[in-house]
Image (tube, rainbow, N blue to C red; front, side, top):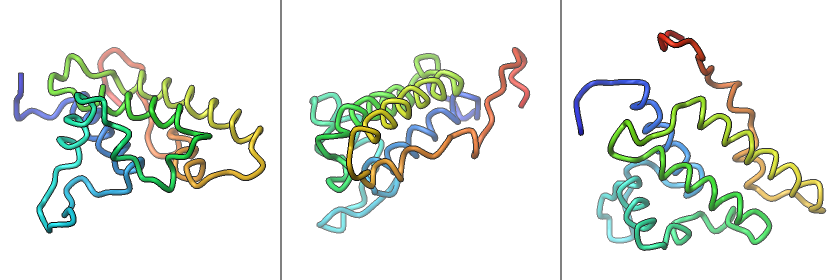
Length: 140
């Protein structure tokens, strides 16, 4: 159910949009080749429903070496963008998944002679930019 209230799960939705901006290198609302305004979240969710989510990845970061992690990150974004707030993960769950993805990227980077641009974009510790409250009341 949609409401106009801002909640903790609203932040999760917004973070899903940020993830999309990183993996596509597009703004949340952008103009396509025909100067038509496009909503990145809607385009992505539609593509995921048709199993074409990979098509909107930025080709500079969607390399064979990191495609598995990129697909997992996009699946996390899809969960964050669910219309029902109850179906979205918590920010704590998002953080845990991002930590797992970063470990996967580090392992890939250690076996790679040259890191890709994707490592630079994604491997910043997320806790440097936000904190996750574990308190039951939700107070940060």
